[in-house]
Image (cartoon, rainbow, N blue to C red; front, side, top):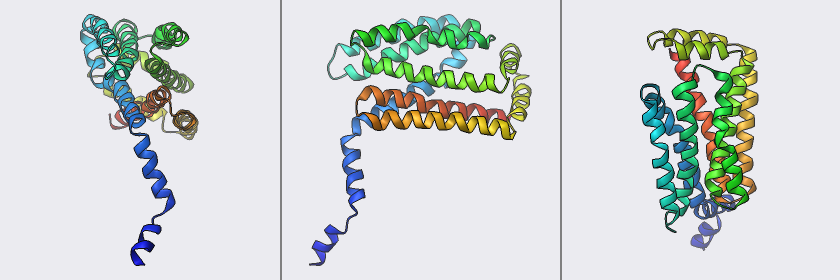
Length: 235
């Protein structure tokens, strides 16, 4: 009697959550890998492209070739698809941060160079996961640039990119003072909520892996921007 009661006492929501997690294991992995592939350039590509931009640019065919090779193998096809999408992000990042990083006005246009490729791939039904991953990353970039422009920080951006590394903490400290206001907090909250809603819609609207890659790329924007603002606050 007590054993039967114990089994029936398990909350239905807990059982449903466990079933959902078991069924969504692959989706969660795609989400996590998408997060990592956006955050990775912050720690790897950023210092590389600042001092060796041609090396970073030359790595693009390696990423694309690796992704295409993996896509030809059924067991690795999904992850190769993501790597191809990452390759376009790596390419545009190499171009901008290598040669145009002092001009914030061309940041989004350069980052969007892969947009026609993603659209063509989606029209032809090829590389759907990687294309959605690229689009999610591009949306996050657009939101970040919108906030920086909204707060009139483009001159600070230029100063940071053109100054010596020893001066960078002073520039970041000045930027953090600008962001310590109610207006800055309200505007940041609006954009954070937008990114959270976009992520939630991507993850709940469909169980398709492409949408989970999109959601992971969008959500990673919050992490990357959070690290930047934390760095500015601690400078």
